[in-house]
Image (cartoon, rainbow, N blue to C red):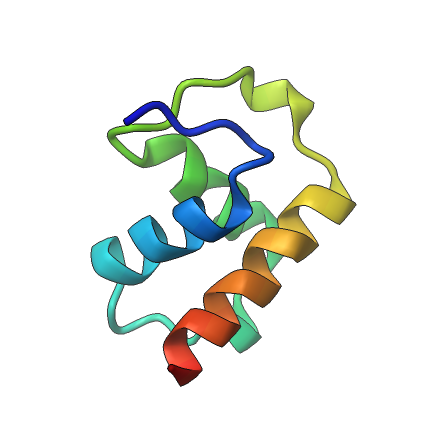
Length: 67
Protein backbone atom coordinates (compact mmCIF):
# COMPACT_ATOMS: atom_id res chain seq x y z
CA UNK A 1 0.00 0.00 0.00
CA UNK A 2 1.27 3.45 -0.89
CA UNK A 3 0.60 6.03 1.82
CA UNK A 4 0.30 9.75 1.10
CA UNK A 5 0.06 12.58 3.61
CA UNK A 6 -3.70 12.82 3.01
CA UNK A 7 -4.24 9.20 4.14
CA UNK A 8 -4.44 10.20 7.79
CA UNK A 9 -6.52 7.24 8.98
CA UNK A 10 -4.38 4.66 7.17
CA UNK A 11 -1.23 6.34 8.47
CA UNK A 12 -2.67 6.33 12.00
CA UNK A 13 -3.36 2.60 11.77
CA UNK A 14 0.18 1.94 10.54
CA UNK A 15 1.65 4.13 13.29
CA UNK A 16 -0.38 2.33 15.93
CA UNK A 17 0.99 -1.00 14.70
CA UNK A 18 4.57 0.24 14.35
CA UNK A 19 4.69 2.16 17.65
CA UNK A 20 2.25 0.44 20.05
CA UNK A 21 3.90 1.90 23.16
CA UNK A 22 3.64 5.53 22.02
CA UNK A 23 0.79 7.64 23.37
CA UNK A 24 -0.09 9.89 20.42
CA UNK A 25 -1.56 12.52 22.76
CA UNK A 26 1.99 13.40 23.78
CA UNK A 27 3.73 13.06 20.41
CA UNK A 28 5.29 16.22 19.08
CA UNK A 29 5.03 17.04 15.39
CA UNK A 30 8.77 16.66 14.74
CA UNK A 31 8.72 13.06 15.96
CA UNK A 32 5.37 12.34 14.33
CA UNK A 33 6.66 13.54 10.96
CA UNK A 34 9.73 11.30 11.24
CA UNK A 35 7.64 8.27 12.23
CA UNK A 36 5.34 8.78 9.24
CA UNK A 37 8.24 9.15 6.81
CA UNK A 38 9.81 5.97 8.26
CA UNK A 39 6.71 3.84 7.58
CA UNK A 40 7.35 1.14 4.98
CA UNK A 41 4.37 2.09 2.84
CA UNK A 42 4.92 5.85 2.94
CA UNK A 43 5.45 7.22 -0.55
CA UNK A 44 5.04 10.98 -0.63
CA UNK A 45 7.22 14.07 -0.58
CA UNK A 46 8.46 14.48 3.02
CA UNK A 47 8.40 18.26 2.59
CA UNK A 48 4.66 18.37 1.88
CA UNK A 49 3.65 17.90 5.48
CA UNK A 50 2.32 20.77 7.49
CA UNK A 51 0.81 21.40 10.87
CA UNK A 52 -2.75 20.66 9.68
CA UNK A 53 -1.76 17.35 8.12
CA UNK A 54 0.20 16.25 11.17
CA UNK A 55 -2.64 17.31 13.45
CA UNK A 56 -5.11 15.23 11.40
CA UNK A 57 -2.80 12.21 11.62
CA UNK A 58 -2.34 12.69 15.36
CA UNK A 59 -6.10 12.97 15.96
CA UNK A 60 -6.76 9.86 13.86
CA UNK A 61 -4.10 8.00 15.82
CA UNK A 62 -5.63 9.08 19.13
CA UNK A 63 -9.02 7.82 17.96
CA UNK A 64 -7.45 4.56 16.78
CA UNK A 65 -5.88 4.05 20.23
CA UNK A 66 -9.22 4.63 21.94
CA UNK A 67 -11.05 2.01 19.85
